Image 1: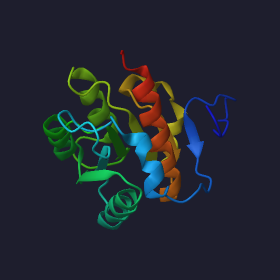
Image 2: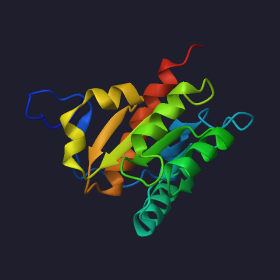
Image 3: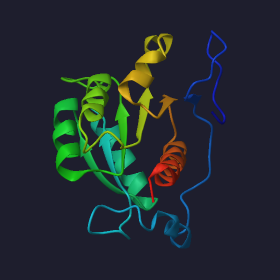
Length: 173
């Protein structure tokens, strides 16, 4: 994994400490997202479901990612997020792992159980170091990448772009 921070066991499986990245791309570079839209809208900007219980953080992610060329829909807990994922079929999910009701791990596992949502790339963010002790939980939940809070929104946007590019190359032709 590029840029990951080694953990105490020396591994580096998808967990990254945030580093300052670049700003949002200009509109001309947003063309990389062509073809990644929702069914029936192949040229639409990618839809990201943002799951965060803190209102100001959720609003900041939505605003910044919208500025970066993403469409966003948000949820404040895991139950609401699961309903929105099943209804809207986002191109990617950005989730905090410590959300009320159904936590981020349960939410991600629920996405994995459904044929309609199992291939959605998931970017998780957490400020809880105890979650990092058992990395197998991330893989079992289908989490594509984990970022450690505090995480600047430009790093989140960059990781979402990378996950979407990888997901588009993994799809069968």
